[in-house]
Image (cartoon, rainbow, N blue to C red; front, side, top):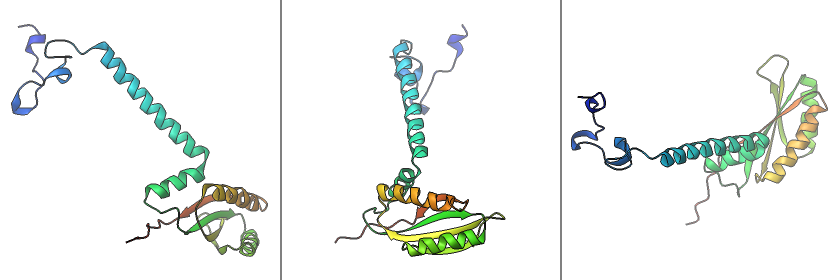
Length: 167
C-alpha cells in the first residue's frame, strides 16, 4: 500500500467520506481546482482590505465612528441625547475658566480631578440630536477652547436612547 493510499479519508461522522472539495477534490475523483483556490485567496484579500479601509475611516473621523457605534448599539439618533464632552486641562484654574466659558454657551459643566496627577477634567454636557455636522463643529470648537489653555479635547460619549414605542 502506498503512502497516499494509507491516509484516512475525510469523513463526516458515521456517514462515510465527504463529497466534493471537502474530501480533497473538486468532485468525487478530481483534485481541488486551482481557480477555486485562487478565488478563495482573492476573497480573503478583499475582506482583509475592506476591514482595514473601515478601520482607517473610523480613525480618520472619530465622530463618525462614535455615531456608528451608538447606532449599532440600538440608539435612536433622531431623539435627543445627553452628550458628554471630555476636555482635559493642566490646572484646576484652566479647567474652571473653560467651565465658565462653556456654561455661558449653554453647557452643563462639572470640573473634577483627572485620573493622572496634573490633569483636570472639564466634563461638559448638552442635550442635543447627535448629528455628524454638529458633532464635528463642536469638536473643532471644543478643541480650540481646550488648546487655548494648553489642554486637549478628548471626544464625546452618550448613552443609548431606545426608539420610542409608537403603538
